Length: 543
Image (cartoon, rainbow, N blue to C red; front, side):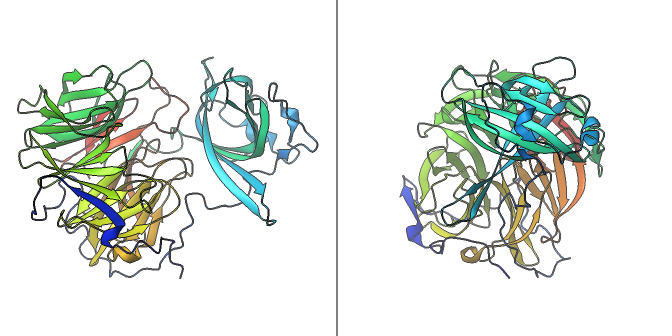
């Protein structure tokens, strides 16, 4: 039995964080978060037993992705990268000839570096490439592809160094096609016109078309509504209206888009709001007649939605220089993840006029990342602390906040949902960036958090948000679409439904990883609401 790594200081003492009290007094513990889980997520079916799993990180190393290599004695000219730089003698041109030479791919890049003690350091990163059938602009790692050979068993892509410093360019040489939609091979990376490193890659064609059905398990698409503002990132459903917030993107500001969804099969666009210089909005939540929007400029923006189709701006709540990334409501508390590394807590007894009462900042030993997303369950705040791991904080009494424990997996902690199963408190934690996946953690004793299960999709994809409903975990999994897992036996999550929302031909697609399903809500009205970066608001039947 191997216990996952965690800091010996993560033993949950009051000294593990700094709490600033602002005007507030003691208050009772709020109820559990609406629209984010239940008090008894999975009664029966599991006796609470498990085997502790070793933490292997996001990229368990299985060795080189391909048998090719940099040709012996090759000296790459970064201004003119060619296939002759690679030894492809062990490759399979016949398999490559059957590869679809188009589409959006994400590639894991593996390199090996000798270290002073004689060992080998293995590193895995990722980039994307996009190839067109119709003569469109091909890209690799967002750069224009200068050389493309993808016919007759060849697969070679190369970019030229951009005229800026520092700059990066690549060459990819395909070698094998071990499975449908998968290409392996070798690559060269140059930095500022000089050879940096070489290694192997495994690239996945991210669209599922032709390899998996569009949907399964009863997730039937009922309507689709385009969002004109930016990239849709989150959605909240209240008062029979869907409030979609969007991130700004090149040439398209973000903002808020409102749909009347009384007829889920025929949503009606009501209005859109975009503020010049302040339209990068990532999170949204509603309470009563108030709508809270997370802005990376203004912090939390408060709208009056007493007229749900006509949001009225009221005020922006205080924040640091970089605004707020996400918002969360629990009872009469509003939590905001400040981009300066702290959590701001507001008394929202009057939803239209929240008052800041406390700030919670993790001690430096825990906070080298900063809160990204948060979840409240039974008086505990579960913080996805990005590169600093996953922390549990007692917020029963905000005058006496205590850090109870931490789980560090060495990658980027992004989002979570928590429930009770078999008498134990179980957290479902998702990472972000390529290689991220679902971790199932027993957090019953936060001072000794252990991993008891996991669930992975393609190794180059990324999770975004998730919601727990009873024994079903709904996951917005970017290019993997919506995935629904039965987690009634937490050590072995089982996929029971999916909806493939990602389509390569939709407007605005690029070769980056952060495309597809961003936000999700399951408000209990019989429908699932998701927002997809290219398609907008999609409404499906709930399981």
